Length: 261
Image 1 (cartoon, rainbow, N blue to C red):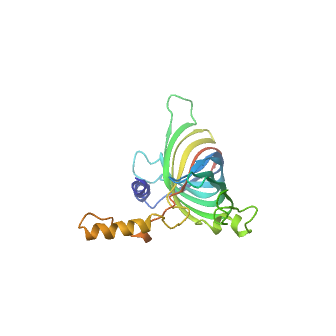
Image 2 (image 1 turned 60 degrees about the vertical axis):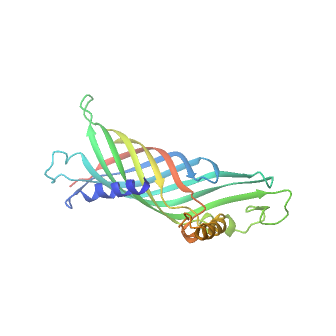
Image 3 (image 1 turned 120 degrees about the vertical axis):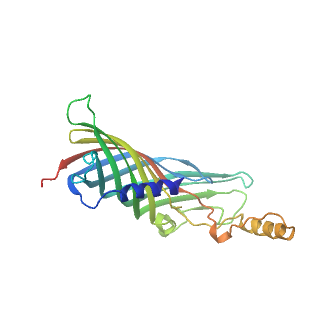
């Protein structure tokens, strides 16, 4: 499903002709709930934030009745993403908890459709938009703590803010800096003011971890192969135990102005 949405976004953008004009520039600020989609962690959202500027292209020379409604948009945003997380290891009587707050430079390439509402006075529009984003990690903070009373090993008892070094508290010492995502949303415009509600979904797993089940699957595959039964053909190096990806639901307020030509 993720690959289909990304390919759809690129396909929509590639349908547009090369001739376009800058028509608007603007700025917006957004906040909402940011979290990480991960099957292994219990997570709760943090305060997501975004601020940035953009420019709009429209296709006034395109011989199509919808030329005044379709636009492309790109710009630069500074975004905050992350999550609070918790894991409970029942057999070990252990608990792990923490958070990470990451800041990214985000470049979106958005395709949108704007429609003026005929039942309202001039200057009232609704719009729909989607498109891919590229996110580059700038800096971030990580807190990771685990307490296991019955096991004294440092691997089971640690706190990055107490026993760890400065490097242990830096998110991007442990996570990938590059993320590719998809933005999908709806908006309303009143004259020069804009209001948008959108989903920002990342596709790149934040960490690369060894899969603890890989040795078991290797043994099982060997037994299955010897018994001529169906085996799992997934190679251990192709598997990622950490499936967490960035997600956010954001509400944005902005202001735009026309570009004089």
